[in-house]
Length: 115
Length: 117
Image (cartoon, rainbow over all chains, first blue to last red; front, side, top):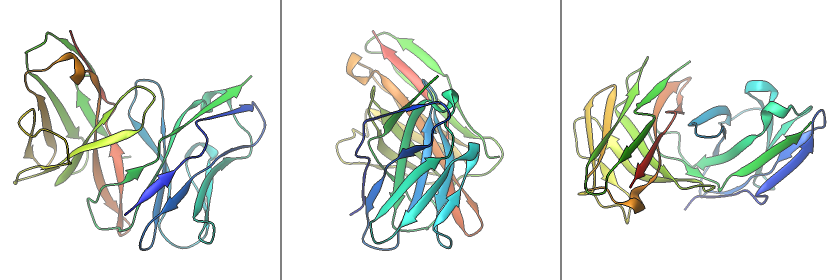
């Protein structure tokens, strides 16, 4: 079975400071990991994904995530936060890259960037 | 980039009526689409997998007779909430996978907020 944990319900960070949103996962096979962002009353927007290769993945809007197999983590990071980054962030995982397979989503972390 | 649309974005209906929500993949074909439900301040919960040309696959606890899914074409899936009740009020989101570079990425619609009075 697959599962995703996002240990922090809420993360607050000052504008211009680096941000980290944590994610740990559990899968039986190789993990395929994703980050999505959701703005109020909107659908999810894809940020980045890890399939294979370099452990550091770069995505949209300056975000990046580091895959750590030994710690089963896939934390989302950004060097300098913007107020406009304030949103709900979801980590997702699945153990196959077969077309059309569903994800398991984490509970979400609300990021607030303070001006 | 890939775009998935939903219509309507917001709907208010009376208890006992039925509501249809459309999910369209605008620039790619999707043999599979997913329907999610999201309660306030909670994560997305998969309701069902919509399959073009065959029956939808429902998650445990989801009433297939209440949430009718029809995948009419390679770009359109519909979710009909039949005999809606206030407890069906929620944010409904669809997604469609698009293959790129040997794997696929899920693209999500903007969501439909259903309010049942």
